[in-house]
Length: 193
Image (cartoon, rainbow, N blue to C red; front, top):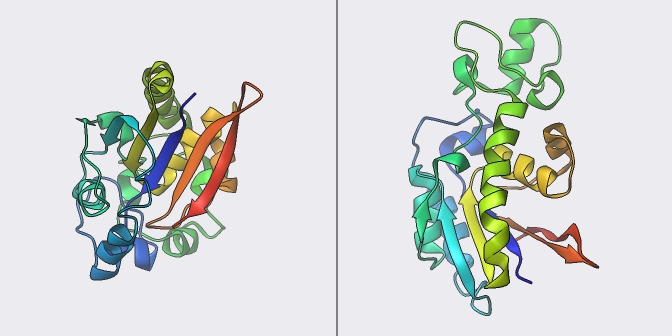
């Protein structure tokens, strides 16, 4: 039985500064390009049945520099839509609200441009997992995307609520492995680079 490898794109200006980035299509920083290049050869012993990539430039460039050949671009792998919080940091949002704000605790993006809920993203990633599971009989599946969406996807793999993604920090340019132990879906590796 194959495994699902979840690869977060390399460092961008906004991932470095802590700004929430969804629809803004930022390029990788030189450091982010180097993070992706260091992954070249890391997956050489794996046989990928599929390599699915978010359509955002930062994910596509990470896949390219890591030596991966995408088999599909998947809209379900785009980052959580932060709505009006796009480009803002948690600290800025918390100061504005007068209390500590966390996408993991609050679960929604308030305001005129509300964005997605964690549950919305959970529905999207469940579709990705439903498409990936049958392919695991033929090899591994690589998913190249973004921090929050991959954390939610990994929580859903484990049968957990999307909010449990809060427990699965995935730094820029790192990856995790979702596999099986005694037919149970588990994490077999995390935060690797």
